[in-house]
Length: 205
Length: 205
Length: 205
Image 1 (cartoon, helix red, strand yellow):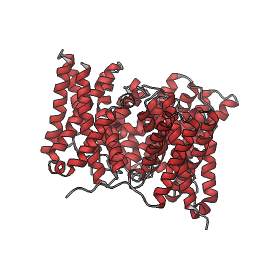
Image 2: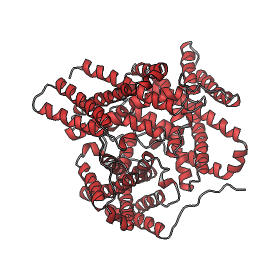
Image 3: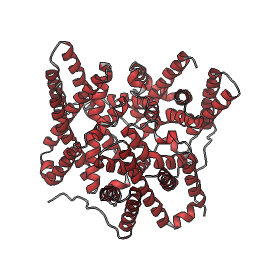
Image 4: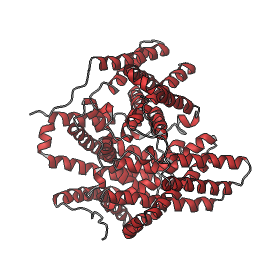
């Protein structure tokens, strides 16, 4: 896949997740530094865990420190437009859903680069997409949202499977990536709109 | 030590911890995906931290993705037999205690493979045995059980020391491993049965 | 910088953080093993995350297991002199502030050794200084102190910037390090004494 396309979705996803992290920090009334750090952790958390697991060190954000500016921009715009952004909550959810789609595909690309099997690549994609949010919630002392009632990681896995199926039937990689990102985005947005969720297990009586 | 023996205890330990993780997730009313992920994290958490610390990347479960089937089997059997398993709580505790013994010895073997000193090997064994449970508890927003009142990590350390002492007096490795696993298992089970615990520190008046 | 000087501040910082971790564990009424582990995690947590991020494995404390004795000494002295130490709370805060300064500079030195850019080195210094405490708080189920109202990470960043500025104007490294450590220590202590803090963000009305 062309490098510039991956770079582009990387920047967009990073910005989206920085906004989501900064919002969570503001809600918990953290100070300015806390807001910046939460934006940072949420943005780079998933990719960092992925890099550590596959042994890609120094991890990506240490090699490309310019990513810090994207994150700072995300945190700053949240602070500046915070009230307005909150009114348009659905826009935020959309940002997060875009980030999920973009980072899932980036994680899968890294797995392919390391010659890992499709199943492992999908797992890496899901980790890249979801675990920034997991760390954000754990640090803020909440049970991670993705383990609870929403279609989140499931959308990421669905998109990952779709990507490999499309590539297998000879769809060009860049088209397969775009379709998968859109599918993850749409699944996530529709699941919120129509309150889809996975079953909670009730102990049989 | 023969590879097949290590493989065998690895699969058994993985299954045991997957059951324990799935149970914790059901108690917190997570959805199906949350249950699967908790089973996963609890099973591979300790070994993953160990691999990261010694630099064994890609980490083990990325190199042997078939381990995912063992974990899925553990989660599935918890869902299917959940109610019955709960009635036989002591069986579950036994599973967890077996897992602790097995994973401690596996962690020690990895340390030996990396030519680390006995003290460090024992630390790695304890991390492999205990930290899947630590991550499980942290993600579920609880103070990790092992830091509280029970003999848990202590049993693992005791078993590790015993292993090295036995090997030093020329007991064959596989026998030393089996004895240590049994010792960890027995210490853990007896500590529950007779409510042994380490002293809690009371501030002197 | 001379190796022995780095070694010296490393031992001192390790001891300081072990005391701080052991105290937090006693407050949460953990058992003896829990106290030891908390002292350990708080001491080596920041350096371990730094080592993992830059790919320095096996991580430092696996290569120098003698560090465990320093940590054990820290935990033991907390247990023995706990009541007295508490009366002199300000001494403890001072220990923690010294640890913060020392570990920040150690993290920066590691970054320089890996030929990373100044900005990244400062980030690594801050991680080394602060993230032991973050892990301590997360494991004990609290929102990490450093994300809340105090000047903590900010002091570490300030010291890091000062270090690079001083080296740039040809101040010898060991002098620049000593000045930066003192600056971090002083900033932290003064911020407690005069209750400085970063602004908490209030949603504009």
